[in-house]
Image 1 (cartoon, rainbow, N blue to C red):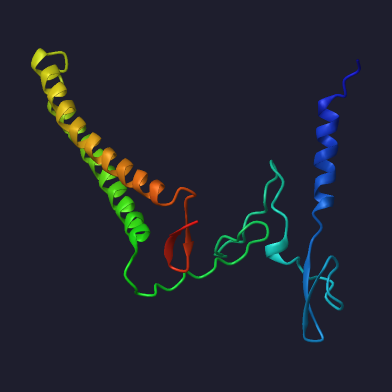
Image 2 (cartoon, rainbow, N blue to C red; image 1 turned 60 degrees about the vertical axis):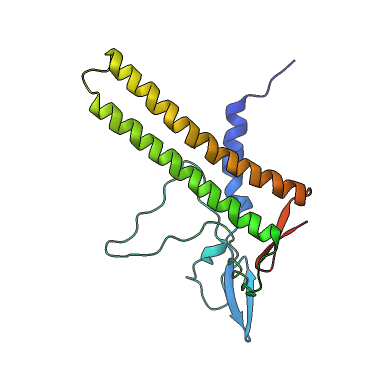
Length: 184
């Protein structure tokens, strides 16, 4: 069985890949916007249309920007503008919408509990610095862990119970319809 060497195959792929990404030029011809692979008529020094220019190949370096030129970073490849967010119609939320907001609030509360727990552990470690091996230090750590374990479990249980209620209400999941969360 003969094997094809990997290095020549990769070299060929790298050599051919730029050819697959031809430059695209944006032209205004007779009031119409056209995109083509050649510069516009009468514009020999035209640069390719930025949004449609290919991203640089891996391992290649881009030319540095001129000194004093400050540009916003340009998106790579073709990008579509994000659609605007839908307007809230102001009507009261149904149970699906309420659950969606309650889950978000419960998750934020759970993150807050975890942040506070980590801060309490840091404070205890700082207070015990130099006496970490002492029996009373170990007892303090266990007491802190037990105290915060109840809070962490309660926060997690709240999130899970709300998610379970939402799954019972919408077994196929939810989606956005306008500005509201609804069952699929």
